[in-house]
Amino acid sequence: MDGDVKKDGGAAGIHRHDGAPRGATRHDGLDRRAVVRALAGGVAGLAAFAGRAFAQGSPGQDAVLEQLIQQSQGRNFGQGFDSASRTILMPKASLPTLDPSTAQTSEQFIPRYEEIVARGGWPTVPQVERLRLGNRNPAVPVLRDRLAVSGDIDPAAAGAGDVYDSYVEAAVRRFQARHGLTVDGVVRQQTLKALNVPAQVRLAQLRINVVRLRTLSSNLGNKLVVANIPAAQIEAIEGGVVVSRHVTVAGKPDRASPILQSRVVEVNFNPYWTVPVSIVRKDLIPRMQEEPDYLTKNHIRIFDGRGTELQPTQINWNSNEAVNYRFKQDPGDFNSLGSIRINFPNKDDVYMHDTPSKSLFGEDFRFHSSGCMRVQNVRDLVVWLLSDTPGWSRAEIDAVIKSGERKDARLATPVPLYWVYVTAWVTPDGVVQFRDDIYSRDGLAASQGAASRG
Image (cartoon, rainbow, N blue to C red; front, side):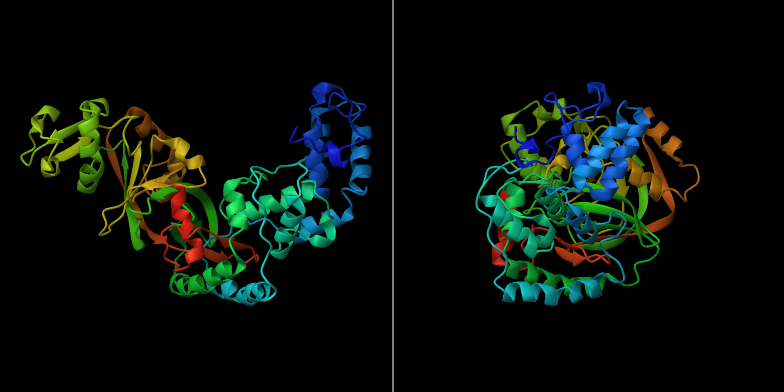
């Protein structure tokens, strides 16, 4: 099996053939994967694993813990790995993209990337369908070298060989986190593509984004919302700390989400959705030509300029006549805005909202909207936005949404909002982050392939 690391000795000698540690019964839950992950986590991983074992009251727990400690000091999980785990850091979730120090910190890393480029960059990892823990593949040594150059793995501690071991998996997880990819430690197409973006492109991204960050990182305020479009991510920031981070679905490359500064002023619960004219023209008319009952199935009603409701059969769908009418979708689980819409003044008529299409949040490529932003766990964001507004506690918000009643909440204190376009930045802990130039605004030919994934 792909995930079985027994081939390279990672867990050899401490398991029965059925996967349970010697001296423990199967119901202890101490299987090979858990042991390997505890070992890969160094001291912290062992402590957490031991804590779980003692909490479960597992028989033979002393023997298991002793075996873990001995194994961690062996040739495969030596002290060097623990040292590497302390120096090669994962991104801290509490550190925001925009901080007063972001521009300066990012600029300080430019010489490091200049040196990488001067030395020839990093190697290109050969094309593979998938690499994961336990795999043996000639591409693995190249992958180790690639991760070492970018600082995701300590070459002195990582060893060598063509086995995709726990060192490599931990480094891939870090790399994925720094590039906004699904953090699963498995090399697939998107991770491989990011690995093989040339070092000179990453250097150019840092230089370009330092200029952007200088205009964005000052006078931000104490409480604000930052939506980084290329990252398809929203951060709720208070006191310089990210209190919640939300995956988003942003605009398609041909219907880009705009860069803007505004203030969140209102939240609509169980909203109607008035279909924008651009969507009527580009999407609704072609859809009605194919599916005459589309509006009826999706609870979308048609109104003329005097507010009189029309039937779909009264409109010529083989023309642009429909753009002269107003299309309004009723509230409900089917509504394109979900149960929440977040409003802020802007010339582009965009907003942030819930969505019934929750599966899109799990994709690495999240650019499917017509300019607005769909927000994962939007209710948590709204609770934070309304925390200073009387009458809108979490319980009260939940009750309104459950009732299905149309209701609006005006924020007692509007919250500053920034939609920004940042494809490279460095957080104060020294972790370099990169994202695809999804709208090709960096002017770098080698990074313009990102849009083709959609």
